[in-house]
Structures are given as structure tokens and as C-alpha cells.
Length: 220
Image (cartoon, rainbow, N blue to C red; front, side, top):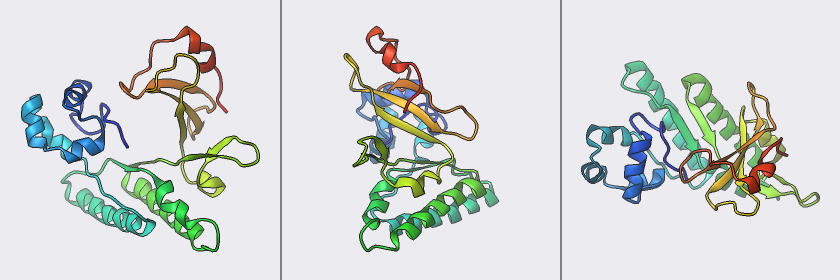
């Protein structure tokens, strides 16, 4: 469930986010489910409500529906590029695990092929149309070591160009809204370091002496 943040779409500033939160609109789903005309009047958003209407949510409950949605999106985005009527900037898939994991394991031999077909479709969107693609993947514990690992395993680990692990912050006094964000794969930046963020405000919290020692240094 994507939280609203500044820059998510044109005109969505931090001030606007605070106004929306005062009306109980905190996530992308809350936003697209609301009556935007009514929200605009109550929050004084005026013309900026048009920018919010550019956020589209599509429900896909299996991998075949998701492939259809992505292929339709690719065709629509290509048409937008050709007629200069506006372009798709970012695609969120939340979550890829939900549609892929039922196909893996057991006698379902087509699962891996379908997963890689989905990966190729996402890469095509990013490469050919210059679209940012953000995918969420669950974490599970390894049966032998007990360590956390991505739910879709080693095959999927080669798909994303950049990987960020988001986990609950641990330690005495850590607020429930704090998360530890760790960069574990990147083609441009050094990996292995982490930062703590507050998903309630999408900012870096003030240093807490109790937690500071836990937050410094490389992540696993």
C-alpha cells in the first residue's frame, strides 16, 4: 500500500499531503477512492486536483491479469509518447509476490517461465518508454539459517537493477512508524549502508541516542 509523498505526481507537495491527511487520505488507494472534486473543495486544492487524478490504480489478482495490464499500459504509453499528450512516469507493482508465489513449487513447472516473462515485461516498460518501475517483494526466513531473504528467491534477484530492503526498526523506543531502509544492490551507488525513515512523515527522524548505535554501519 503506497503512502502519499511529495513528488509522487505533478503538484503533489508536502503542504498538499498534510491537507489530504487531515481529511483521512494517507495512501494512494485512499486518494483514488475519494471524490477528488469534493476533496479539492474542502482542502482548497483547486486546479491541483487534476494532477492527483493522473494516479491510476488497477487491480490484478493473478499473473495473467498483470501481464495483460502491463501490455495494455505499454501500448497506451507508446501512443502518449507519439501524440505528446502526456506520458506515464512511474509504475508501482504491489506486490509481485502475490501473483508469482502461487505458481512456484510443486509440479507447477510453468511458474518460473511466467515469472521471467513478467520480469521481461517490466524491463521493457523501463527501457523502451523510460518509465520508472518500482516492485515490492516480500521477505521470508530461510529454513536453515533463519536469515531473511527475498520471497521469490535467487532467480528474481537478478531482475531489479536497484534493490532496497525496508524493515521495521528494532531497538528500545523505536516508534512503530519507523523503518530501516538498506541499499543492497545498485549500479551506481555503494551498497551495504542504511538509513532510518519515518513513514508517517517520509522524513529522517531526529537521532535517538538509544537507537543511534544500531543505525550506524552496514546492513546485512
